[in-house]
Image 1: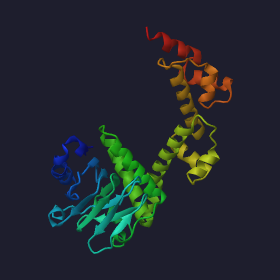
Image 2: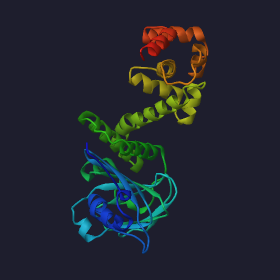
Image 3: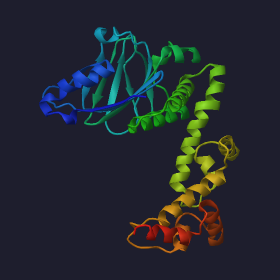
Image 4: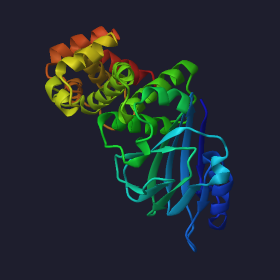
Amino acid sequence: MAFFSFSTRQFAPNERLEAAQDIYSAMAQVQLRAPKKQTPHVETRIRLLPGVSIASVTASSLHASRKSPQVADGNDDITFLIHPGGTGGWLSHLQAHDSLACTPGRARIVLNHQLGSVDFYGERANFLSIAFSRAQLMPLIDDLDRLPKTLLPPGEPLQHLTRLALALTRRSDAINGHSTAQLSGQLLDLACLSLGATRDAGIRSRRGGLRDARLKAIKADINMHARTPLCLEDLALRHSVSPSYIRALFNSKGTSFTDYLLEQRLQLAFDALTNTQATQQRSVSDIAFRAGFNHLSWFYRAFKHRFGIPPGEARHIATHSRY
C-alpha cells in the first residue's frame, strides 16, 4: 500500500513552518505552531495499510492540535500515540481527560473524534502514531471508555506493535496485496492484546499476530548472534518463553530452530567465501569457525549438502567469475 515521506530539511529555514502546515499537517489533519524565533523541523514517514495508518515522526519543539476544523473531517479512528524512545519527549492533551506525559515504551490511546493536542519538546522528539479503523478494532476490546484515561504499560504486545510499525515506516518499497492483509491482521492482533482484548479475540490474537511477532523477534535475535554459541534455553529466557514454545513456532512454519540457525551460519560462510572484495583471503577453516561452526567435518558436509559444491569450489568459482 501507499508510502509517503516528508522533511522540512527540503525547504529553506524561513519556509519550513509553512511547508509543514501545507504538507504534513494536511496529511495528519493537525494544526502546527512553533515557538517564536525558532526554526521548526519535522520528519515523517507514513505507511498506509488496509484499516491501519502508521506515521513515524521526529520533530523539534512544536504544538500539534486537532481542533474543530480538523475533527470535522469525520475521522473516528482509534489511535495509539507511542513514545518509541530517544531524546526529547511530548505531552498529550485530550478533551475531557487529564494531560499525560508519555515516557519511552508507553502509549496513550486517543479517539480521533475528540479534540486534542500534542506538545513536542527537545530538538528531536520521536513520536509514533498507529491509527486503526474503529469498525475493526472496537468489537475486539473490552472497554473503550477507559482507554484514553491512562498510559498503556510497556508490555510485550505493545513492544512488538511498536517494532513492527517502525519497521514498516523504514521501508519505502511497495508491499503486495496479500502481504498488506497479513500485516494489517498482525497489527490488529497486537493492538487488541495491548488494549485488553475480549476473551475470544485474545485467543485468536495470541495464535496469530503475537506468535508471528515473537517468531520475527526470535529470528532477528538468531541472525544477530548466529556467529556465537547459541543455546535454545538462553534464547527462550531472553524472550520470556519456553524452549518448547520456540520449537513449536518454527515447526508451525515447516522448519526447526536447529535448521534455521544452520541456514544462517551457512549463509554467513557462503558470503565470506564468495566475497571478491575482501582485502585478505581467510582460510576456509577460519571462515567456518567465525560463522559459528565448531566441527570442520560437519561444516564441509552441511555446506556441500546446502549448496551442492564444497566450500573451496565455491570460493574458486566466485574468484574466477570476475574475469
